[in-house]
Length: 285
Ligand SMILES: NC(=O)c1ccc[n+]([C@@H]2O[C@H](COP(=O)([O-])OP(=O)(O)OC[C@H]3O[C@@H](n4cnc5c(N)ncnc54)[C@H](OP(=O)(O)O)[C@@H]3O)[C@@H](O)[C@H]2O)c1
Image 1 (cartoon, rainbow, N blue to C red):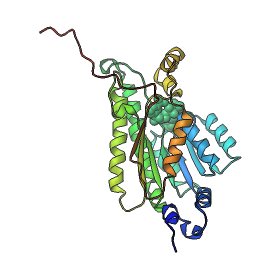
Image 2 (tube, rainbow, N blue to C red; image 1 turned 60 degrees about the vertical axis):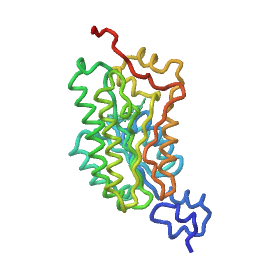
Image 3 (cartoon, rainbow, N blue to C red; image 1 turned 135 degrees about the vertical axis):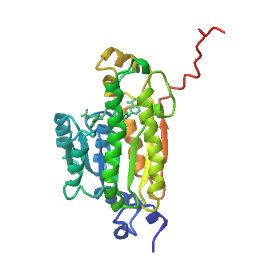
């Protein structure tokens, strides 16, 4: 007979595990689960890879910086099975090739963490570089789109308990000066996540969008073109969220009972709130 706890458990080995305590179910389940994480060479992606490795999930890790990826894969191989893919998410052909040829043992996914992304600059729109805008659209929108579409069949094959976790941002919900195209790409992530849920009705595949505020990572070095002083000023005295906090949140979302979907989750450090409406007082009547 199926107990209440059995109905909470995702994945293909449910039947085999019936009758065992739930904690054992979860451990057994994680041993057979694989998560695909984009942008694992730093920040949230790297911390998330470590968190899932600690729980025994198999990992497919991607990023463009080969040396970092190789080092992380070598380190985490001591804990679990890891497959590294040096990939630029903007390169559709390379993505198609790599995903079509995922090795046996990594080809059935329970989780996809669409994390790779970036912001470039905080200039007003009228002063921005179109190249930077294109890079953000190509990475944050098109890269996420390619990864999702190419991996959907593998997530659907897993079915109940599988998850897509998209990394959006508070910038997708609230505008601030200089958020322009970055905010627009993250608004796409939010709406795409909601729409995906409708399309995936009946497949058991869940979709979540996390929307972090101020977090300390190389994100700000990239945004400010490597300017360490601007990076330091961004976080000074603010006790920002750390990548490990985000990793813990992602792990929690993917390990919810299979009948629960966390639609969106917005996080900020306590030190951060909203600036309120601003008014131009130079207007002459
Ligand atoms: N930090 C924040 O305050 C914050 C807040 C809200 C949302 N986010 C979002 O969180 C996600 C992760 O950011 P993070 O804070 O962890 O920043 P991060 O430390 O700079 O990490 C970004 C990751 O994305 C990868 N990446 C960037 N462009 C790529 C491309 N074209 N192809 C493949 N991988 C690419 C980078 O790897 P390679 O350079 O090796 O390719 C890196 O692993 C991003 O989507 C970001 O927009 C960040």
